[in-house]
Length: 249
Figure 1 (spheres, helix red, strand yellow):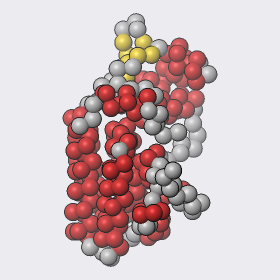
Figure 2 (cartoon, one colour):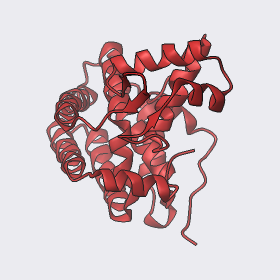
Figure 3 (spheres, helix red, strand yellow):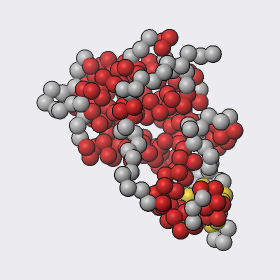
């Protein structure tokens, strides 16, 4: 059995920037959040068709909040309505993913430069939490692909949040949300998990040493590698991920 390091109680805060809870959710908000999880967790994949009644029955809600949630997802480019035949999950828009990765690159490299500059307010507690996850001996690394995928997302969100610009962090969270499905496909392979540990460790060490140019260079290479993997994604891989039960729970 691979060794899986238990997550200390103090660490959940590190994951907070990735997905912020909605304080007052309507039923439509709940349906929307569940359907987005279904997409991110490969329960609904590109090409899948379904009706509002099917969603209503599965989630135990009326059709009104389901319809409201689906129209919201339609505006965000996740689904489309089919004339008299329900809804369909849209194919991946790789051109849009490329643009989102470019935006992510700008936000994150800007953030690490700010983290290394003395005239900016930096949340060192977030950096310390990241160090407790990524700067560990190899024997203590998690082999749980789901956990590592979640930690990876939290790592990048925490870097931006720690830089102290709330609007930058908000935009970055939105980008993170929109690329989640393809990003998690990157963590179905053990070599990518090992590389993520190594690369995150190097980035953190450069930041802690206030070497902004080096940290930005390492981060850029790290994101470009992930972006290159995204270009290789096929619909077959998505279906394999669904049938293999690798979806986060």
